[in-house]
Image (tube, rainbow, N blue to C red; front, side):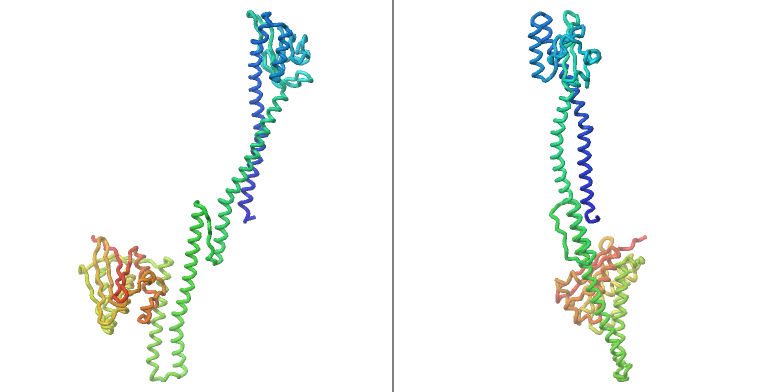
Length: 472
């Protein structure tokens, strides 16, 4: 029922429309048509009666035409027009009847009150005349000569003729209606394929997506709202597939990055516990355990940071601080690493002090990640340039190294979780591949931008912006 609900609804609407129109045509429509035909016939009989009075009866009263000639003329006219004509004198007696049954008698002898009602109203409708003619509609025209009433011309026709005309018209209308219902059926079929059929296709693919089958695509050869909806669903499926692939990759990477240090920690700990490693060598292996523990701590911290930004759970604590002072302080933490690797940090500030409004702790984390990467991937005896410049209402912070650089095909991927370029893997022993992803999330959480320019074998420059603090 649910699958064919739209089809059933369309079918019910079609049946209701078809039956309703048919009933209206054959009841209200038929009554209206009959009323219109009666009105037209009444007017027509009036015109005919007036014409007969002028053209045929007046010459008789002027002694131009004989009664026998007038009778013959009346019969010809009546036959041609399919009507009945009676000429009644002033006393109510019929002198001419094209049917011959009323001549020399009063019409009221058979149809009591007919002439009185006819003269009073000018017409009668649905009045019973006799067994041969049945019920009639009639109109009357007075015959006047020398300002004296000489009689009446009565033109009448059978009500059955009007009924037959009504049925003929209605039959024609019903035939047209049959064609209309066929066209309407075609329209409903087209509507089904335009609407519910396409919606069913979209729904089917959406159900496949809900089951994790993202390879299916909706193919609609239309250019309407359903086509736009199909494109949206296809896009959603592609994004869900990417997300599903990312989740699988994410879990695999996390498992790998946790498994390696845990295996080392477990192996060396059990070896020391079992006495496999001599006491005098345990210090070296404890350093390895500490190193791996630091990797796990950093990985866990980074994962928590990422989770916070993705779920909106991490709120920025904005404050005003001197970005130049922060850079100096952060750079000092790399003094030992730089000395060991013979790398020089060159700090260049456009002004002695540049106050920005941002989250102090998060921006310090951004600077640490960028400087850490710059030092890590720099060549020995090289320089890492760190600078700040004011551009409008923003402070532009740059961290530039002269190291191994990033391949062109990897520039767009460095922001991805766990991503490491092939050229960096040998140098980044302790990295988790999450630092730049976190850096980008922090900068974008401040509604600012971060960019990278790199040339393989020459070096890399990261730049990001922060808003200048408003001066009071």
